[in-house]
Amino acid sequence: MTLDEPRAPRVPEVVDYFAEGWTAYLVMELIDATTPANSAYEKVADALQWLMRGGPARHRLFKDFEAPLLFSGKKALEVYMNRALECIPRGGRPAPISFVNDKVFFMLSEIDERNFLLDGNGKLCMVDFENMVLLPESFASFNRNGNPFAEKVADSLDWPRSANGYSMASVGAILQMTSDETFGLDNNGHRIKMPS
Image (tube, rainbow, N blue to C red; front, side, top):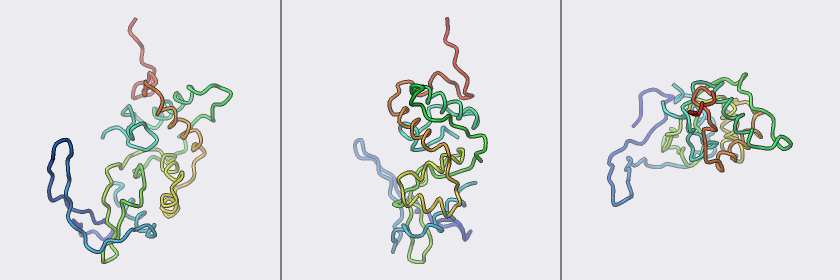
């Protein structure tokens, strides 16, 4: 499936869906002559910008890739992240997270080179972009960590590096271990009052 807009990425059309037992299958159209787009950073960046036009945020920082709350804004998310940091003893606690100067924009929550191919005409094909999210730019910067492909795409998009990186990695580790992923907060970042 291709839109007539030149910047639009080519997305394989879904042609069938079926289930066998506990496994579901999604069959997409065959795109001939695809090659990995692992050196087409500018094309991937352009496709991501084209896509930037509900539900909880999906990002690799969160446990199971999904935020436990539908945050009302970036301040509520900032309060939440800093509440998670309070789980770390003061002596070893990283710096507080601040999204005050972060722009909020749409981004892919995980940039994986396996999700981008070039067809026979050099047109970028995207095969998985379910995790488009609206988050502060520190989350885009966080995507660079340990991923050379994402690093080069981020450079092509001029995504700045964030001072929040180490603190965000600490929050990610805490989220993997906690049983109360909300940390007693509501979607506005306010503590939930327990009934007496």
